[in-house]
Length: 252
Image 1 (cartoon, rainbow, N blue to C red):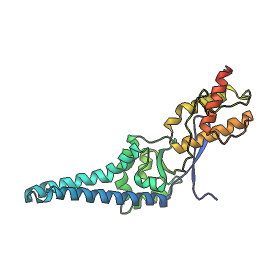
Image 2: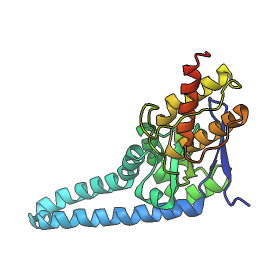
Image 3: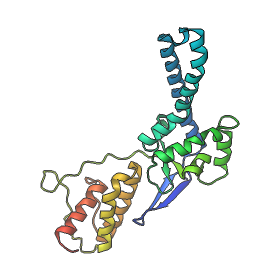
Image 4: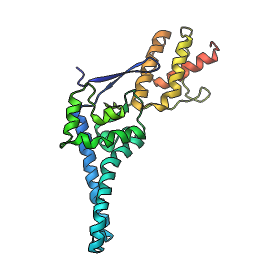
């Protein structure tokens, strides 16, 4: 039995993707790792300030600037840390990488800076009254395990399965190029449109969504065209080869 509840996303290519939702346990593992890193960074910042004499620069300086510095550091580490990493790592922080989970939009696409900032500004409310009490209750009361920040930003947190290594695409003219020698007459214009639409937008998808979509589209094309599965080809290579063969035949 699958231990994870799943989020089903219907893509524009009419391919249903199922992503396992992250629960309280995996998200707490991620926040524990992130919290330890935040504490380490905060301690290092205080140590650097002490080394450069911030706390020995006079009673007036310390009394006036210390609260400002501590508030600034706390803000940057508590809110900025999550928003920064989730923006540059497409929905992941160091803790989320350890837990193999990722924040994505409800549509399955990567989050942007706006969603990362929005969901993390609400983190202070989710934390109340302590240890994310409000966030946990909210997660337990909805099927997608979303905290308040996820509702505000329109996001969900999913488990990220390790992706298989995809070999780079090689043109037919190069040694070792991949090709499809089977007749593709069974394929229609809609199949070519499906393949080329995926190939055009695949780089905008998270790696695990891209892999899952490629496998499902490739399986559909293989079944319809009667093409045997070739383990030497990645799904992306197969779809590229099919699209190229159809175009070479000038069928559409």
